Amino acid sequence: MSDPVIETDALIVGAGPVALFAVFELGLVDIRAHLVDILDKPGGQCAELYPEKPIYDIPGIPVISGQEITDRLIEQAAPFEPQLHLGQMVTALERTGDGRFAVETDTGARFLAKVVVVAAGGGSFQPKRPPVPGIEDYEGTSVFYSVRRIETFRDKDLLVVGGGDSALDWTLSLAPVARSLTLMHRREQFRGAPDSVAKVMAMVDSGEIAFRLGQMTGLKGEGGQLTAVEAKAADGAFEVPCDILLPFFGLTMKLGPVADWGLNLHENLIAVDTEKFETSEAGIFAIGDINWYPGKLKLILSGFHEAALMAQAAYRIVYPGERLIFQYTTSSTSIHKKLGVSG
Ligand SMILES: Cc1cc2nc3c(=O)[nH]c(=O)nc-3n(C[C@H](O)[C@H](O)[C@H](O)COP(=O)(O)OP(=O)(O)OC[C@H]3O[C@@H](n4cnc5c(N)ncnc54)[C@H](O)[C@@H]3O)c2cc1C
Image 1: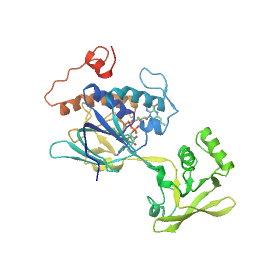
Image 2: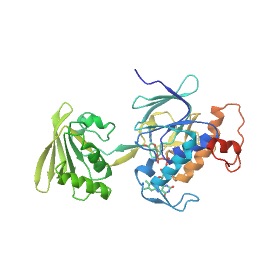
Image 3: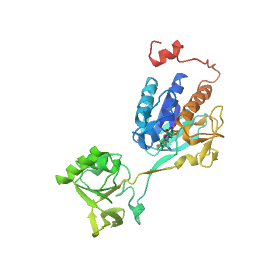
Image 4: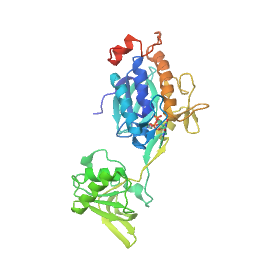
């Protein structure tokens, strides 16, 4: 039986920095939100692409790292209890007969929302496919670009390929459940955290896992079931017998399913007005890097401003006919109550 439909005031597509701040701005006007993100953690580009790099242009905060700003935004949004649905992609969005929006994800989660806020950034992060002929035939059966459930890989012969954090982290997490695990990388130097490299090398030294220097050239198997990966190195060609291949070659950003939702686009970005940041479809807003308007700057601070104005407009849809009184967070006792602070 499928899970029940989740009814919510606001459904936010994405859980990047702008989506997280939108939770706060919506919360101030009594709109609660569910968020869906493809990644397995919130923070969007900040957490995925540059968690340790410093950001210098957040007003009032001279320097903050990508991960730190994510953590602070999560803390700021916490009083409004955002419901996060991670590791899934919003695939379908359409208006229902009663004026709400039906939203579906690729894991089968379904939502009914009064407003939808698309905060999908550069679009969906998608794994880079290694240039190996015929790899598509094995995807989803023997070739996986992400790990959703560790149990899927129990007692299997795994080949992990790559030299970044994902390859190293998943090597460490999957080695204890796998029947055998081989890590392959084209060079001896890894791009991942030195601590992870040291742990992986210790496992290689103890014989728990194997390491091969090389580059994939081909796949062997039948009917989507892999039996070995062919590879080459400076000293010749070789094969690694395996039934699962996990290539971690990094992520690219593609617009993804957002393009299919019937919204007016401007060069692959969602066109919005600058009063409400509403799309061509009333009740669907777009904020942050995903939107376009004349003069748009793809900056976190622009997304924060857009979130504040979007929330004012969303209020009029969620609470039709009710008057919204503008209040400062500094002095409003009703806002203090919502935030659980004493003012
Ligand atoms: C290296 C680097 C340095 C940067 N430095 C700065 C800086 O110094 N200052 C600054 O202001 N900005 C900087 N930026 C830009 C800044 O990171 C972006 O402006 C910001 O992340 C945009 O936030 P967002 O929430 O709109 O989108 P994102 O951070 O891109 O988050 C969007 C989220 O939506 C999710 N998503 C997309 N499609 C779907 C879907 N269909 N279903 C579910 N989830 C979906 C994605 O997985 C992603 O997590 C930098 C960017 C990079 C790459």
